[in-house]
Amino acid sequence: MVGIPDLATPFGFASFDVVPAEPGGTTSITVTHYGAALGSPVYSPLDQFIMRRPVGARHGGRHPAQLARA
Image 1: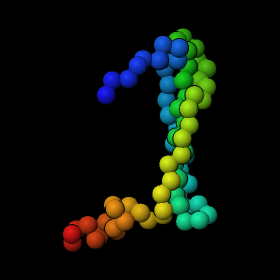
Image 2: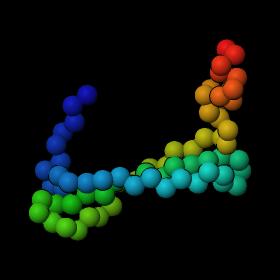
Image 3: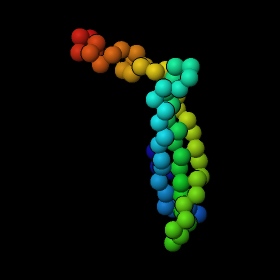
Image 4: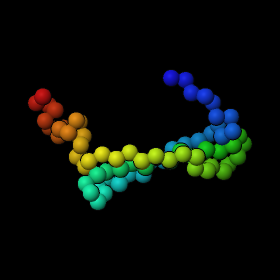
């Protein structure tokens, strides 16, 4: 997939904030995308989203040791 270039803020990075065990039994990763205008040293947050899943829900809900036996 080819994206449309962002000419207003062509430089950027993403930060990832992980909460391994939230109340309610979930883990989350908050992703924040920062961008800067051409030639600017100032980065500002442009977008953010959160991914959540139940704690321990890796590999289709199976523990890695179970994958070797599958």
